[in-house]
Length: 157
Image (cartoon, rainbow, N blue to C red; front, side):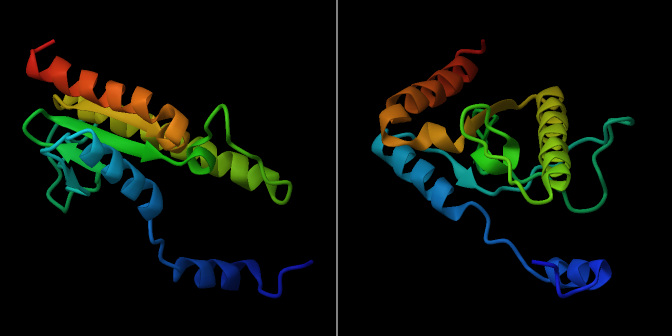
């Protein structure tokens, strides 16, 4: 079915739609953290990142907002959606407008790598979890991964 809007009008319409984020996925991780008695985290805390070329912190508001931040241990956790970030196991490729979606997901993955690299250069430990890692059958593995990341930082490894 053809689009009823011109590309410019479609872009304008879509730009007005605001995302509600990955709230359900994050709430599953909140429940997992609470069940595992892991404390000390905050959600969506803005972090200042140095500029990639100069190393200076930006003057404007920081743009990196990890899903979970453990400030004391300097650990950040991102929960990446299987579709939006191209999970090798569970990502699907839409049939319609395939090139657009392939490019979009590639840009997301490239941005993820850049953010991870910059945060690590700034002294943060970065943990990226796939959405599928929060499924019931994989929760114990995920909890173990979180605990190991937090403990290795506490021990100074």
